[in-house]
Amino acid sequence: MKRDKNPRLVFLLVFLVLIFTTLSITSVDARKHHSKKSRSHSKHHKHRSGNGNSAPDSENPPAPAPAPLPPYVSYPPQSRIFDVLSFGAKGDGISDDSKALLAAWGAACKVPGATVEIPSEFKFLIEPITLQGPCMPRLVLQIDGTLLAPPKVASWPKSSLFQWINFKWLHNFTIQGTGTVDGQGSNWWSLSQIHYIQKRSKDIPNMKPTALRFYASYDVTVCNIRIINSPQCHLKFDNSGRVNVTNITISSPENSPNTDGIHLQNTQDVEIQHSNIGCGDDCVSIQTGCSNVHVHHINCGPGHGISLGGLGKEKSAACVSNLVVDNISVQNALYGVRIKTWQGGIGSVKNVSFSNIQVSEVKVPIMIDQYYCDKHICKNQTGAVAISGVTYNQIIGTYSVQPIHLACSNNVPCTDVDLIDIQLNPSPRYRSFQQALCWNSYGKSQAPLVPSSIDYCLRRHSGSFMEIAKSHENICQ
Image 1 (tube, helix red, strand yellow):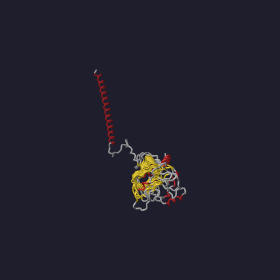
Image 2 (cartoon, helix red, strand yellow):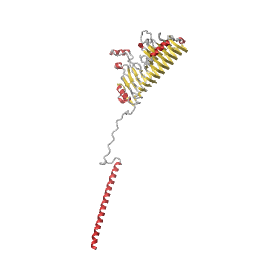
Image 3 (tube, rainbow, N blue to C red):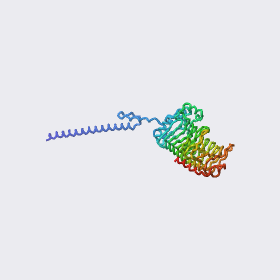
């Protein structure tokens, strides 16, 4: 029995030894694996949180460097300011900056509320151009610098003699700023220059360009800028509406021919206010197709005053209605407030009011001339544009030639004309004066009236002439 138990005991001991050895090897391997993993994690963490002086891990290369920033652009695409200098303009007054202005305009036209900037302290030579729409609403042309027209008459293309800068098909548009639009028109005012350009080509008409012209544009505002020395008219509105001109200055010499300040034609719903206009022709000229026009708080002179017409040229139809001119100061001018029509025309002028007009050294403060002629001799014709419903109220100041001149047509006389509180005294600086002229004009007068002869100026009963006036008004309906 004792021999049988020894082998079993030996076998049991061997089995226990094998189990113990296996467990020991497994434990050692587990500890080695954990230690290696911990070191690897510690090394990786140290690389990520280092101060940048550690060598990079070859197994974990650094992230690529960020892309460089784009070059600086003065006006990024999302900006609403489009400076002509950013589009290549030089602004030295010599280089042609027309293309830069057109490029800036083209970019701004597509952005609502955009501004085309003409920066201050620069002068930009601009050839005759058209800045046209349609554009996005609330577009602004900010003129703080100076725009210069080509000074040499011969350099103008014959296709561009009608205007210098033409604004076309615009809505909800504003021109503003502290800058100047300079037409450099002195060469145009010389007859020798006009003759020279005509000799270059028989096809060149006898015309001079307007500085700024609007065509078929609505909800337009022009404010604060200066427009000077235009070859012809300074600011013109054709076939437009809802126009506001505020606080502008227009200036050209008294002897610059046909340089009207503001010219309206076929344009309705206009307000012109708080501005200074001195030129060689009408401060404000209102032509056919105009209605609902209010002109007020204007300093006019030198010039030819505030004028309606000439209307009805070459037997054409003319229609002007609902015009109010008030709070005007006219000094050193040819006329104060004037209506002028050509013989032979048709149509009507009606519902016109001139009030609170201060005149100083004005040759003829009040004028209606239905025999207007810009030549030495014009053919006598029987037809005329009918004039009715015209009020002159508080026309006060001094004249140098004649206080009032009402020359109405024999066949189509002026009707419903009111003269109220007219106080016009001869200027002490002059000695030779003419008596008031009143011909074929009907209406009523109301004191005070100076000179007293004005009280006898108007005939009391127009009779059948009122029917003639109404028949002319039908043409304009």
